[in-house]
Length: 256
Image (cartoon, rainbow, N blue to C red; front, top):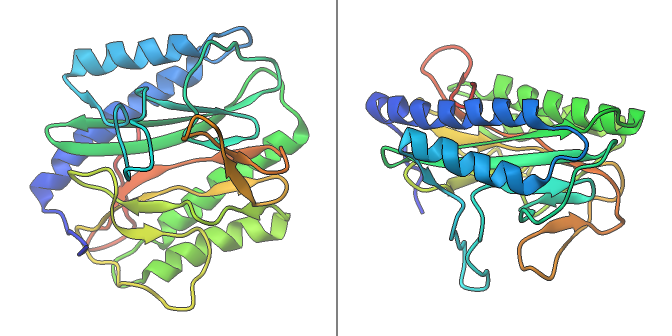
């Protein structure tokens, strides 16, 4: 599948979708507290998207026939759960770390972003894991300049993580975004042998480092969606949708 560059009009529409996602995640961050039932977040997202006239990108999504349709409008992954956690009747506890991954389709275009939030007071390890993962995301964003190559993003993300001894998950990563949630290219969070495609103005990417405190090996749960660390270690995930500009740094489309 070819890489699809976006026009200025398309980027404007994607900015609207991205800002909706960014605002909603910022509100979710403020809601997080011990005792919060995560189904309240599910309902909150439904209400916010309805008010904005947006579609829940994740609901009923199937990347391939082997997956059941995704049953919720947000992914909520707790502690050892890395990505694609399905919201269930569960209360957050002091010390949990929780990833909220959210996609909105507005005017036919997708905004996609994720944050990891600590619940109350978390361990020093959890604090460091979240800090390093978010720093890795911003390192990747700084490397996303016209004239650079995809491997510059991959390498910047990897270099922000490796010195801390954390694991970088393979098999999951960033991707192109547009009318579809997943477009070319796939963006690994570590260097490849080849430099990959040149970054050109109009390329829109979701960058999303996924980092573990222990082994980088992951397993898929019985629900067919939830991905967790194999050793049960904490993990973390941050994501922004960005657009490559003709000059300067990439524009982050999913800020609040």
